[in-house]
Image 1: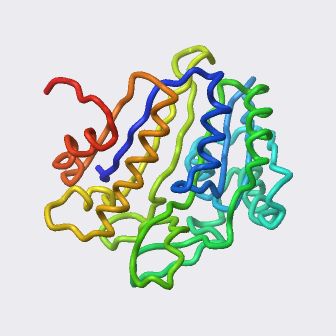
Image 2: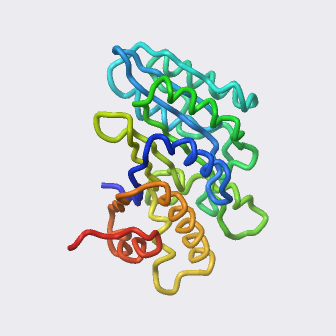
Length: 259
């Protein structure tokens, strides 16, 4: 099984707008795409906004074809063509766009991709919240760039998007998931997910200063995100994260169950 690091908490659904305000205003995680999906009466309901919706759509169109209704953001007009391609994939129930965003710049030498020109407007929040009022049992996927320190310094590290190690699949450094909890819409579970071992490096003895600083920034973001909820949860997979589990729990302020 692939390595991953996931940390989240249970949040009152009424606080979701406040969570989104934080997500769109912090200086570490910078949203570049929001995808929403819900089912009603056998029909898939979609919300699409932003510049990197490929992975989101891939997750949901692997199964049998469904009738779909699609709502698209009226902001980020420079992403209109990308959203149009994604919408076509949904209607055809076949993803053709590949895994790389057309706004993504890949620098293989540093195993990182960047999205320096893509940034979702905070006006997207009101669109998302309006859509959620209609479909309160929807699941949201938010992908974004993270503000890292790295070398060489002339690269846009503050807009780092995906980690591209040779031993792992290329995945975003961080994704956020907001999903309904239980059979009612009164609570949601909000989770920060990373499918790369990148964050384990900062817990290792002798790691470089950049790894330490980047993990510290991520931990600060996680602690701020968790303050909206209760019943925090840390999930890890892979040897690197199992070794670092206690250190990460301490950094994130997440209690661990007894061994």
